[in-house]
Each structure stands twice: as C-alpha cells, then as structure tokens.
Image 1 (tube, rainbow, N blue to C red):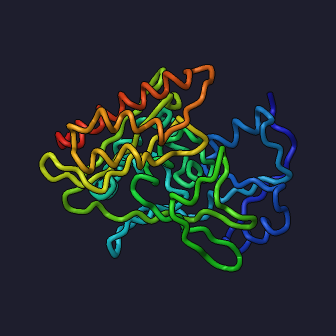
Image 2: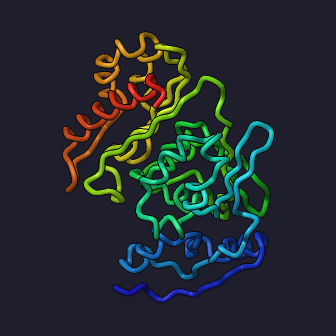
Length: 284
C-alpha cells in the first residue's frame, strides 16, 4: 500500500517544532528515525495531516556523561548507541540489548527517542529504560519536565507525552559499583520483535542480590517491572529462583496472539528469569 497524502515540514529549530505542534495538534506526526512510522503510514494505520521532520535538529542527538548521569539525545541513532564506548562502560544493559533491535539497516536509521515515544510493548529500549530508572526529558513551548520511565508508559502505544510536547532526551544514572546487568529475549528469528524479553539490573555481592530490577517486555501493553518476582531473589538469592518464577503470576498478564499463547509466554518468562538470574550471579 501507499501512504495517504500529507504535508511535509522540516523545521530548523525547536521553536518551529512547537509552533507546528500547536497549529496541527493531533493531526501532526513527528518523524525522527521513521522505522516504525513509515511502515504505519504505508499500511494506513496512521494518516496525519502533516509530517514534522525533526532530523535536522542535531542538538537532539548525541551521548554525553556528566554529573553521574548519561544523557542520550532523542535523535541518537541505535547504531551510535550500539558502538559507543560510553554506553558499554556506563549503561551495559543497553549495550547488551542493542544487537537484538531489528537488523543493522534499521539500527542505522532508527532513533532512541523514536523507540521510546512509539512505546511498542515488545521493544527493547523501553524495557531497558525502565530497569535502569531513566528519566525522560519532555519539552514544550512552555518549558521542560522530567518524567520517570516507570510513569511514562501508559498503555498500548500510549505514553505520558502531552499535546505540544516532544521527547528531547533521556537521563540514566551511570553504572554504580557492584551493579550488573543482563539481557535476554526469545524471538522466532533474530531481528523479530520478542515474544518475551527481560532486561535486568541488580546489585550483586557474591551470591546475594539487592535492588533487583526485572523489566519484562512482550508480555503486556507496556514493559512491566516484576516486583513480586524480585522480592524472593533479594531475600534469598538463587535458592529462591523457583519462588520468584512462581511470583511472576502476580506480576505479568500475558496475552494470546499469532506468535504465542499466554500460557507459553508465562513459561518463557520463567525460563528467562532463570537464565538472567544465573547470568547476574555469574557476572557474565
């Protein structure tokens, strides 16, 4: 299919972006990487009146480390994240996740902010942001506000972004001493969206785990922090794995679709929890 007719504007400044968002409201769509939006347009799942291309706003791109935080600009491409030494050093969870994001051609064009704002529940970066307690910087003509990742994802493709707002960056705490990350996902083929995935981050001291963050994706309308499953692991470590796996019943509400049944998704979530817990404790 072909995309419906729309106007195209490439603003030269954020002020122009906000003016266009104010003018067109819900009839506008932001073009960042376009790896999801163009497909939606061609399938006529989206029919905006105007496409606002922000790819020329280079101030929205890049990775920087300052004051104990890593800032990732919304227009930073997946490939830049994947090859960044700063990301490998300070955000190893994201470095582990990036090779699983689609295919190289898509990672060359897709952007961090596009993935977060699109909020696909089977995408890797929203779950990593949740596990790492990221703060998203949302900006409008009236100023900026910071929204924690745990409050940003509201429902299927729904976020905390308000009318006239733009996601401009994310801020992550740098990796603290004693913390480790682990990432696993199960998909039919490499590059496909995950049937189930898990982004995990925890403090590890020998065989003990603390501050365990288990962000599952592909099992609901948003990425999900499995707090009930984290409890036994924090209290007893690996010997409590079976208890933690059973506790996933209280955390997750998987669904049936053409790729897997809800029952299979729950089974795979338990499998991933076992693998990721062992990986965290092994320091792999």
